[in-house]
Length: 154
Image 1: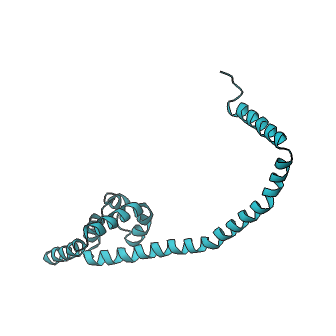
Image 2 (image 1 turned 60 degrees about the vertical axis):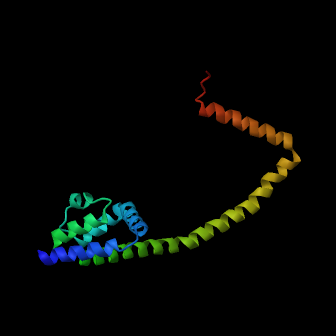
Image 3 (image 1 turned 180 degrees about the vertical axis):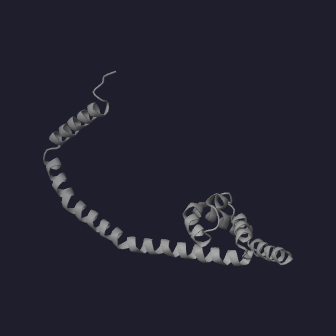
């Protein structure tokens, strides 16, 4: 029991050595990411009930205490495992972002191509017959207004 208290104090001391801003940012990040990390935490410690883990929401220190008490692992060991878990999750997020980059580039190219080919087709008739274009736009606006208002007049 005494060694567990000393380990808990060591873990608390390592957390307290962070600057207050860093600790607040870490706690905020953990709180924001908790829902996404919960399934991974449950995989790591399947003996812990989901409700027990959810009761620690927003507090990294409380989560460490709960896992340490239920698993028999030292607080430092729990912190190390959680850090590995967090790093794995952030690496996965980076991989997803990197895989989306080529798709984003293709979409940008497609939009540029569409803009280059469609814009002249629309601009040329409007420039040749501006009054007709205004009339068509006004007619479409009236029809849309009637449709959106449900055909009711107040």
